[in-house]
Image (cartoon, rainbow, N blue to C red; front, side, top):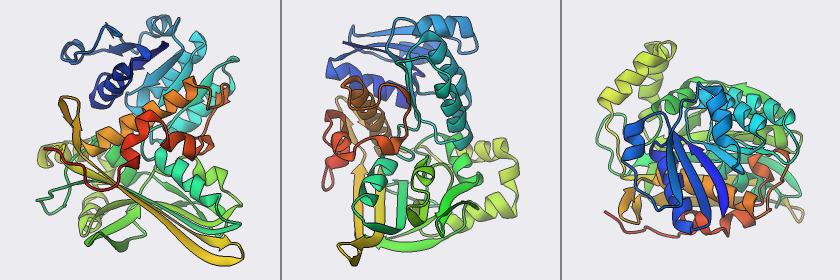
Length: 367
């Protein structure tokens, strides 16, 4: 049995615990500062639950001692605290953050950690799986010219002018729309402005748009520096969304009042579990002396997991984190130091038992 602590009993943390518990191979401690969140969750006796204040560093380190790894399913702002505690407790660390600054802090903590400790941030969908897939496709080219990573979590049945519903963290969504976007242009790392770079495309008869957003590229822009002419990450939305978001964030300057923007989103945009995740990577370059383009396109829909109905972003995020954990515990990841997502072998990932959602072709049926 692999011994693991999961901090954060929200929707994603609970989903990760559910998948790992059902595998039968993990002994879990699920910790949260909210007793009601913990009490509402039911697991087998392989999962213990504990109230925990992250601000109590001594208690946090004590909780981690004796386990093999910790997963932060919390907001990005507390990840450095948990990573520091992991370093002190001598355990490995995993998270889901999309925040670039936080990831740099985790990297510095990993560099000062002890032997036998692995730190793997950004283990979700984007950043996460999209970087693993993008790097895998890049390796198929003798000379890589352009690599485009595109991801979107969209309501299956949009019915408002924004053509959008909340499907995940509101704070994460706002950061994505407001923070600088890393990319590579003409072979050099650059910062792009969020909400710019608008493009349109059609997939399976539906029209979409995509535009610059922050965080989804992860560390791939560092890894591929000098190996690709142009590398970009953009978020996929239904057409018309970017225009209205640009009006709110830039014209009305709500990007300078993020707490107010969060309140507006959560007041006006209903949460939905009926969503679809779109994943598309397009690579262009030279293969066997010919200028070629390869595109990998995937869709993941909401569906039933056991006796619960999960949203597509919930499924893909939890599945990605569980897959990375499984690869770590089965010695298919480095067992020391800081690990980037693109260091994870795509074939190992996609063949893992937890990655089934990424292998599904077609529309799974569900409520």
